[in-house]
Length: 137
Image (cartoon, rainbow, N blue to C red; front, side):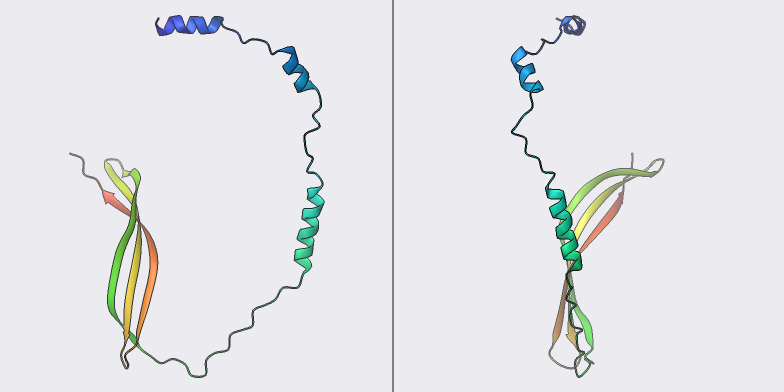
């Protein structure tokens, strides 16, 4: 059987009519449907109540008695690649395709105090999209 014969067979087919029992069930009103219309006034009342409640404001921070005059200098820096995901190939100019790679890095920097034995460590995540030029041969 080829595709044309299958198509001819399919055009001759018609769906069967629904049974009378199914039609009766679809036409009668259902008492199992729960109406949720009454929740709208309750939600509105809750929103108004929260809007009218007094909000506590955070107490302002008091500055420390002595400002910090410590000077830290960079001592060490590490970068760790956490993930790399291929975003696809784009063509910025005709004949100049680039593959876009989304990279997520973890940066760790250590700073040391110039005057005493103290150090400051900074850790942060960084996302970067790197275009990689593709050469066509």
